[in-house]
Image 1 (tube, rainbow, N blue to C red):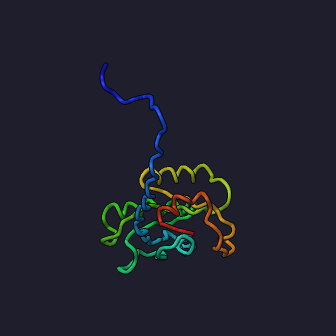
Image 2: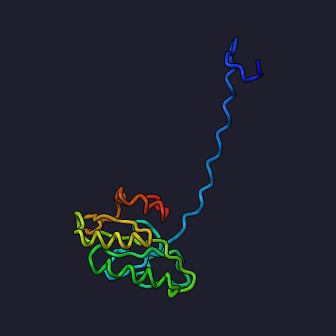
Image 3: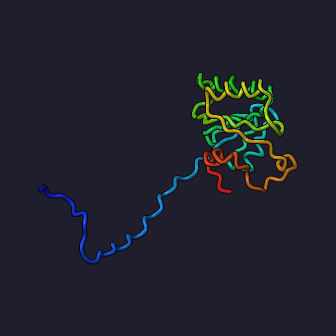
Length: 164
């Protein structure tokens, strides 16, 4: 018979000592983002207030702003039409040097489901860049930014390192 591990143990079995708890892995500092609106009323100021980061308005961030950019647009036709030309501008290297386009954030322009033509436009955008969706939040429309962000935005909150 060959040698192998014993299957049966006779007598009392010693309980192994508890290992000291492992230290929690160090968390990298959350990267800061610049929110850049693609049209007026996109929601840049609200997103910066709720999730943190730099409110760039409708301009590229300056030298003091974080170089990681999140483009923001509403889910209406004009907002969605504004996305791809700017994404192409960045891909052609025509955006200010040193900026990195990380994703597009689409903010609902109304409560409820999107009409089919708008949903199709969003699929086109999603085919070329990461897209994060923010649903309609009535409290934000009323100016109340104190509550928890919608559960549907947890991926966005993780991306930007929001802790509230």
